[in-house]
Length: 202
Image (cartoon, rainbow, N blue to C red; front, top):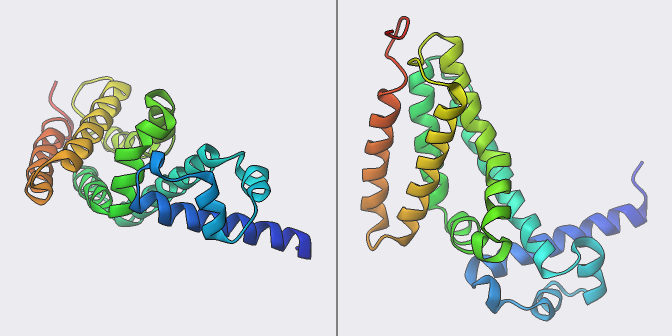
């Protein structure tokens, strides 16, 4: 049974995460100070360092929470789709929808590489979304619907394309138009690798 101390600790952690999500969504990472985070949360600096080892740790926790939620949302969209190519189409479309959300776009795509560094950003992004892409590709393999390419390379190609397209959308002057164009392009990329039924051609 959860003790009062454990409940207080979890509530404190949740408050810091919610505060971080709010501030990091509205402002650039470098414009948010540790002092502002704890003041807004109504907590002490010691609480921030105890639970997250400072501003950077809190940002990473918020980042990962958004990535986990994105992965869950995409899985929920495709879980009942039996056709592997349609599943890939819907997964890509759901991912582009996620990227359109303000919090995900600003924290994960725009501020993530700045706050975490490119290598760490890539590691965390692959940890969550990379596995989802591989699952979608493996579903095509299991159904005999993948053209004769190495599975790992196909998964990396799709992951890389989606990553670059998502960043391009955030930087576009007309993000909605660019998102629609990206969706069409991704469907063509998927259609060129995942066949429409029966065994893939030799």
